[in-house]
Image (cartoon, rainbow, N blue to C red; front, top):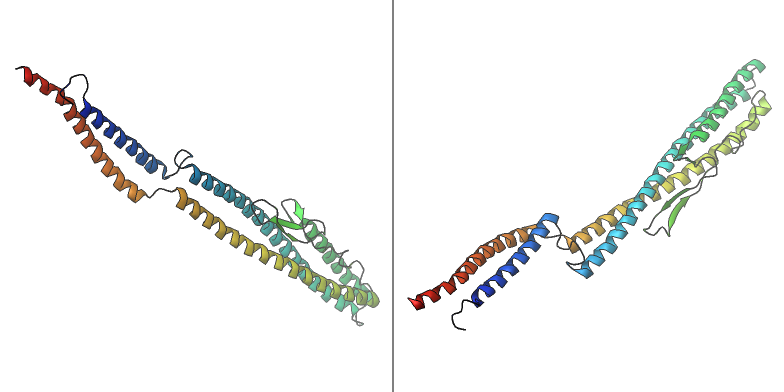
Length: 270
């Protein structure tokens, strides 16, 4: 094409290249600003959709962790209560054995029975106050339940235990040797029952702990996977930024030179 003051092909080409450089520069600056190479569906629709699905999975696992934390709290409270009941049963056995002693008189047994009844009442006090988040797993009604997957279709359930004095069969008096003997047998049975309950609660707490550890690792793995999909390589983007800034400056110079080209037409008329 010859010289023309109406159409400057060189300037148009230079402008197109400069626009491409500016567009690439905007992309790189966006990645640096957000830290993401895929921040929306426009960047990469398929990758963004996969990342969003995994983010939803991660959100579900956050709810699972919260559920497991609540279960851990409930089990910790229940275990603490059951251990306290177990300690009280040991004290009750001591009182019952002392009351069974034929060497004790009626007055002594009455004093022992008074202590005995106070300890029995303390068992019920502990059981009634062993609550977490409004639920009590020592009164036989509130099972400890926790979800273990992101759609809440599966859960862990640890059965509630019945550890009140009445449930344990400790409701008598030790004012006589016969009564003490009867209560002693009931206490031995109660101790075995509480030990079984402690075993069930402890095993349940360990299971919740194991699942919680797995969910934590799974969440971390998914988060890393999302990062691999959408995170920008900032070292690479920094190098690209410097390269594009140089190209932009060169493009501006090329456009300036191209815009000066029509001026050479004037030399033809001198």
